[in-house]
Length: 246
Image 1 (tube, one colour):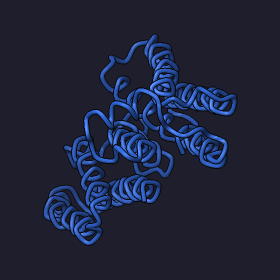
Image 2: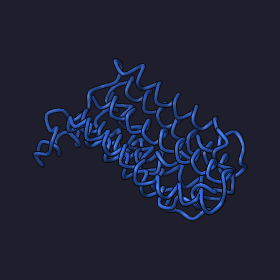
Image 3: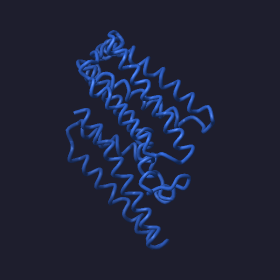
Image 4: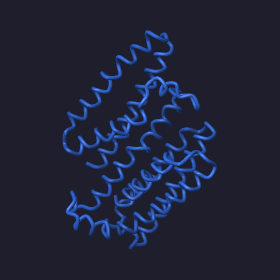
């Protein structure tokens, strides 16, 4: 799954870059160009461009990343077609996954650096690169996925994020929670990961109750829906990453 790992690294870094850039008309172009450069650079460092199959899969990964960036930017700008970027991301990930047998092994400068630095998984650079990509997509990419699902299901209205106003800190707590779940799962502590999930609900419950007392039944229903849908999608992102890494 070397090309999938390359794609995940490029998507994760590109989305982090997008989150840091101001919202301007040129942002999609800058992010898309950076994404293509990241795919090429990561592929070269991982030594996956040495075969024709590796080069074709790298092209497919670059096209998938371009489609992800452009569709999400258009959706966030226009407030329409929120399911399209999710479908693009899914297909972009499935292509290298289904063709994993044709992808070359991870090697090159990345593998040599792992061996030189004596880092974990130095003997398995493919797994190291995959885990790096999975960690990166838990950050801004995970937040984007959660936002797209929330809006497509009606739990969040475009341009009016009431749930986020009421439950502050979600953009920071979401990535931290996903990293905790992924890290504990990789360490074999699945039970501890479950405790993290349970603790979130217990910690948020008093806040939800306070909104019920202050603002009425309808508002608490909307905030609760936002909390539940967002939490489940966030957990699925982390658990999906854990399944790929296992």
